[in-house]
Image 1 (cartoon, chains in turn brown, purple):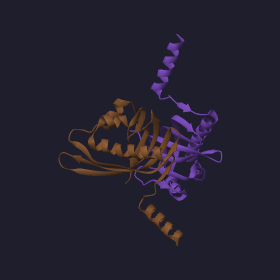
Image 2 (image 1 turned 45 degrees about the vertical axis):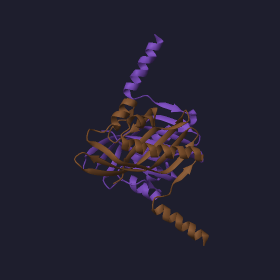
Image 3 (image 1 turned 90 degrees about the vertical axis):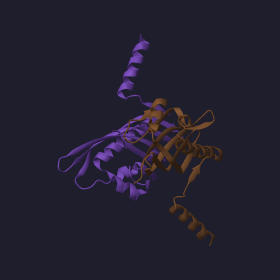
Image 4 (image 1 turned 30 degrees about the vertical axis):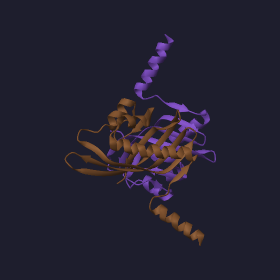
Length: 150
Length: 150
């Protein structure tokens, strides 16, 4: 009976996409989850200083249709929104995080909404892989790659 | 004089995109480089058994515009080419590989050419991040995500 209930909850969780797996010390996992949540806040607030600060100084980002971007200037330029455009909603949904010493991988889905000053909105969803690195006690993103989900 | 020459070669290499950095035991790096090279051969040969074998049993692949795909069936389906289509050229160009125990991250560029039975060809280029995992002494891909370069 207990097994059946557990199995049911497990399958139910899977079907809802809740199947998170976090491998490693809880304190490290918690800091990465916290940083991921804060990153979404920085995106919505267009807080470019904090967005940059979420990455290591030598971070590489992999937006669609660009070369690999590295360096503060290139990363800042990528994230800077044009006049009249804002991100009203942003969420990261990690599926799995694994701590490997001072590095960690993390993959999952993201979603968000872009708002324009003419009142139009568009929502988008995608998936990502991030390699985090712990620098001076802080988990920061070193590799950040993503692409869309239809 | 020697410093100037070294600096010149270094800058020249960077400008050509040759700036590879491999961090970890040489034997492990070499096996990953070998596996990456073989993966391109399997793609060109449409050797689906060996393509599948390049991934861990629980691997996740992240093609553009799909959900995260996992499981032999989904991965096989993704890589299987339609009738009359072949990949005549495929190359992975790792920029950096770092071994972290039994896991490694690897990122870089890839390029390839698709050939159709009507004689038409298209070439493409992209960038990728792979998380490798060593299983029973063999490095296999656990996470494989990529997107295009314009």
